[in-house]
View: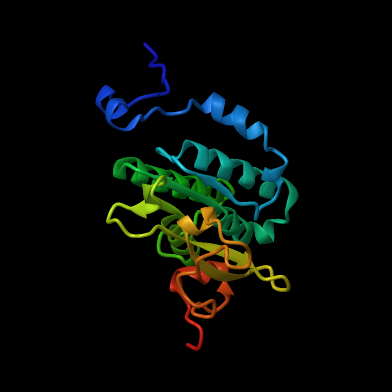
Length: 215
């Protein structure tokens, strides 16, 4: 007898009652992403999921970006562009088990894309270490409503800004999540955590090395 896999919309009634946790069906995820399909044609277009769950939206966004890369870009830039695709996707999840599942799902999708083309990156390679670092930096465990993590500290993200001349170079610009909803006028909109030159520009596949300016 063949088992039929079904999507799980809730993990438990207790979690629904305590946290309002309900997972969006994949079909609905795809329908919602169809509404912004044009934006998904751009690798660097940023997306943020305020209730990331186990990563269903995050992974679906990454899948579409990777399909775009495969279809429209030369193979010799797939690694670079796939890392920038990961860098463009952000999320916050309240529950730690979901948070870990979301990060694992993103990395599995990233590795699977390259493995599907005969280029599975080794776990210790710069490519996978960079992907892991970007996922860890962009998908946080915390409370979107308060803008704080599980320790009560401000949730901090970074913009991963591509260099205009060398498209493989990234400039890291950290900021607090709460600064995104600040009422302060530009240019003080972003409450940067550190001086802009603390991180030196580096190649996207070396971002995990946290290259410091002046090193």
